[in-house]
Length: 423
Ligand SMILES: N=CN[C@@H](CCC(=O)O)C(=O)O
Ligand SMILES: [Zn+2]
Image 1: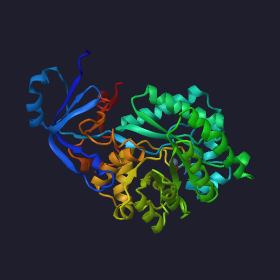
Image 2: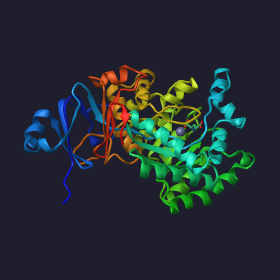
Image 3: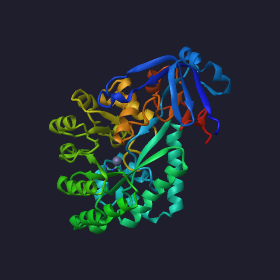
Image 4: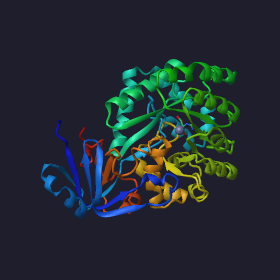
């Protein structure tokens, strides 16, 4: 039998343990252990407790363990980002300059820029170029303490190019330490070639793209940008129901620019999450709470588009489980820093530090159906753990705009040490 690899994290001044029982009890940190340890065997967490408890339990075997000393640092579950547009080519700083001069995000998109601009550069990129550009971003996510990301297609908008994006995402998942969970988003925009006949494009998404994506098992989720001037709630419903028939779980970009019935639709179709929600109606929020739809909030997008962030506090108080994400994309949120998003969650959405940590770990894991295996430091879960070089979790949120990541353990393996990649 192969010898096991043991790893011990000792003398952590603080370790946050978030129980997966918290799925819907999103607003508390269940347990913080001072001077705690985690015992990992292979890829799995075998024991969690105080230094003393684990020392007693594993005393005869400590000599054979590889030890990571986290003295004076803060240990959390590996962060989970449940909403990214990771796979794309090109960059849109020209639009940033236009917005600084007063143009709006939708004006730029309606004039053929925005998502259309990235669709052009992504279609033109070779598979290798697309892989290399996306891998660079994934490395940056890892360096910021993120061990799992969701990644959407949606910059292809033809069957061929949507598949190209999803295949790159799959290859990243297979070759990179960070797990990449795939979402098909063929309905990210109505391509310019269909601007006079959007229903024909919806037909292609439903009849050609979804069946193929499902046949090739390239995605688990199906997402739609439901917004005035993009896809109507009626079109979005057709697309999401079609996905369900092919085993793809609905997600939705909802109520980002104006109230448009997206939150209500998420509840109606049984979406696992509704994302953005800056302008969600009270009724929509209520329906999401009733159906257990997770709100994936993206305060980096509001920050970058200079608009008011979603009301996270109101959603939590209404009983909606809230997750946080970067929304990493070249137009509305070109960042990989989930810790910065956590800071915005506190400053712009009325969330507490405990709530934003929960939102970026266990609730984020549930938003991509991974709550049973990641998102908390619990016995039996994957050993995905991040150590931040701060003495307590408050400082992680308080010292904003800096990368505090010291060490990342992914699947029981050290992949970032002293803030540098080492996989
Ligand atoms: N709002 C729609 N989609 C992305 C932005 C995509 C882009 O601008 O390239 C978002 O989630 O913000
Ligand atoms: Zn998005």
